[in-house]
Amino acid sequence: MVDVILPVLDEAAALPWVLGRMPPGYRPLVVDNGSIDGSAQIALGLGARLVSEPRRGFGAACHAGVLAARSEVVCFMDCDGSLDPRELPLVAGPVLAGERELMLGARRPERGAWPLHARLANRVLALELRRRSGLGLTDLGPMRAAPRAALLELSVRDRRFGYPLEMVLLAAAAGWRVGETEVGYRARSGRSKVTGTVTGTARAAADMARALR
Image (cartoon, rainbow, N blue to C red; front, top):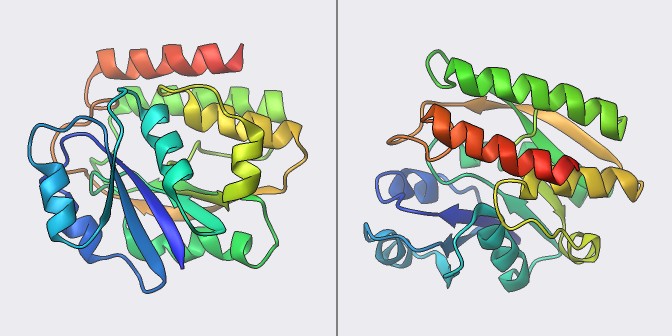
């Protein structure tokens, strides 16, 4: 069984679709980060395990999920309907097989799924990530898998949007075998808190710049 950490902040519209497509052997662990739209109740009603993380921040929710997880390998995935849970085995497979310590899902966007400002920001970030880490990554994929115990040993400190980037940088520095595989990327349910606005993207970029420093 693989625990799938799903950071959630007001994702009531997407939760039924996401949880309904969880593949066999993958157990949803919803980390509610202060939702006011009933997301927590929906997750419980659909059979997901629920953890509450009152400290706001994407990294805070992810870290709470890692602490609460029970499986040897954990996955992370956005819970906004942009990623299809049925592709989790593509990402987790190499980690479960012992071939990689960290796998990322490189997003293959459908038309209209990725705003131009967010796509450009991601391209710049990927270039800088390759320069800093020496890894041949094309995307800082939000669908990912890693061994839980080793991930805790990395001691990722960022509790905001820099968490995914810091994880990859620390993994590279620790000599982890890091890989990526393509996954689909759909138009999300509702407006993204990050890519949905230029302000949100700028805030995430600032957090990631701090992680790079």
